[in-house]
Every structure is written in structure tokens, then in C-alpha cells.
Image 1 (cartoon, rainbow, N blue to C red):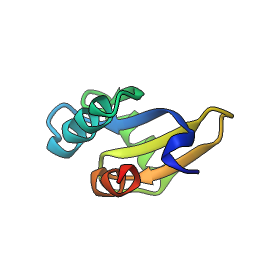
Image 2: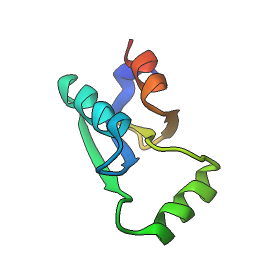
Image 3: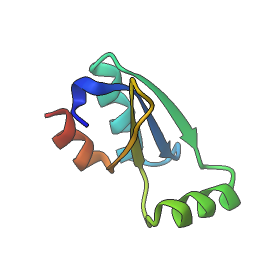
Image 4: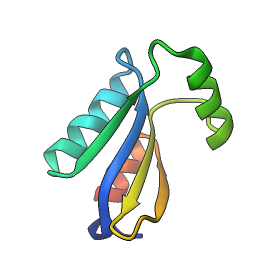
Length: 84
């Protein structure tokens, strides 16, 4: 999937996470729709997300194409590289 194929992003993050906030700002500045899934208050949900995607840190960023295909981008650094 290339960045031109992306319809929207999903960010799993937390209010206190600077990289999560920077990722949201970067996506906004590119004019692309995104959903921010705030894990701040729900530790059980946070642990479920971490287990399901096999990650230890946030943000976790997913790209969803116009055809519905989902690609795991990674964190903020990987998002910057992807948007290049």
C-alpha cells in the first residue's frame, strides 16, 4: 500500500503521549481523515490492543485503503517515513 491509497488512519494512543499527539498533527497536516483511539483510561483495552498487534509502545498507527485493506504502519517514526 502506498500513501496515495490511504483513505484514513487509526491511531491508538494516549493523551499524555507526545509521539501520539505528533502523529495526529502530522496526519492532520496532510489533510487525511483519522480516528484517534484514546487508551488513556482503559487499561484492559490497552492491553488487548498491545496483545493483538504484538506491540509494547504507542502510538500504533494503522492505514486503511479505499478498498478496505489495513496496513500496520507502526509508530510516529514509521509514519513520517511512510508519508515521506
